[in-house]
Length: 149
Length: 119
Image 1 (cartoon, chains in turn green, orange):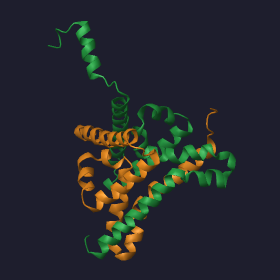
Image 2 (cartoon, chains in turn red, orange):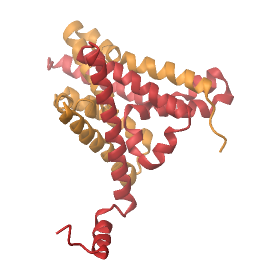
Image 3 (cartoon, rainbow over the protein chains, first blue to last red):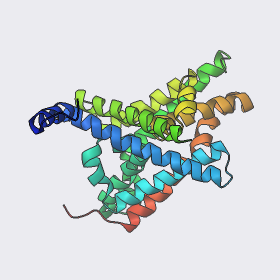
Image 4 (cartoon, rainbow over the protein chains, first blue to last red):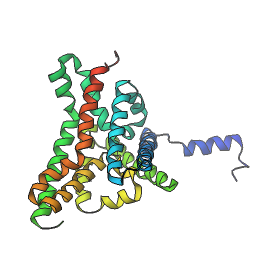
């Protein structure tokens, strides 16, 4: 069937298949870029494992590596360009967390090394650490109280 | 081995797609998405659900910020089994110490070295 399509038919088919609404397009690129970043993470993990790391330290080392890459790409002004297309595909991976630290830190550099970079780097990362820590301690307390572990 | 890459792509992509839907369809800002995803990761982990996704998809489940919540929750459980009540407080941060230290150190130095492009 595919072979017998005329050019006009193909164009109609392609149009139907290609994401046309901004929502569908945004979701498509978020999926694609986000998925690719995770695949790269899997590759980094496998490289660390290949060189003899155990699974858990390899996962930790992967996070640290991705955080570095995210920070560097933000410094080089490349990450925001990818983010324009990828949206949540660049926000949700750990590289996006790193981006959320470096971007405001650079922006507020003129306010000084302590209250500029030192404070403003946590504009977004701060709440993430606060709510992450609070929820893990609260959940841990519940587990401990009711002997659920 | 290659199926692991496919699974990482599909699961990681799907988690990001959920984030995109939340951004487009609700008034949630990216900061709120990150916070919600971390808390969701903690909850899904203590309920014993996220571990299964990590086993299935590897980096597809640990690289998204939900995986940070997973590390926090898993660390808290490990802390409790090893040290009891004090482990509730030490476990989560201990498990995520590398990522937190790396974010702060790399973040600080990169911001020190590079300056934003003039808009």
